[in-house]
Image (cartoon, rainbow, N blue to C red; front, side, top):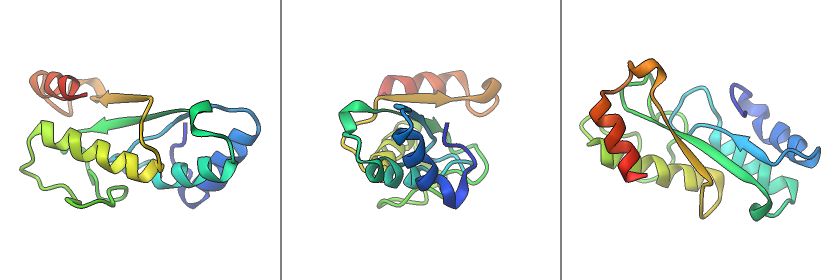
Length: 129
């Protein structure tokens, strides 16, 4: 996982890929991840995108600092009144931009111990994905 690596994320991701890692897990709107650094790192590694497995997280607006750090596309930071469906769309758009790719292999719906969003919102997010 590429969690809590800060400004070293790009270098560490490139080193990991060069060493043989092919599955990189990160998080788009989660403040503990540097998703843009993952995008830079995999590009710098020189390994073709189709040889990598990129995984990210969808995190709802109820998480502290939601979307502030990693969201660099139009519509950011996310409005607090966005529907869950619009949150998912913006999160994916942002992750594609950050990861410098046209597709993401896996998106997890992050709902830590079911405290962050309701069951209904979790299911709505899953349906969009």
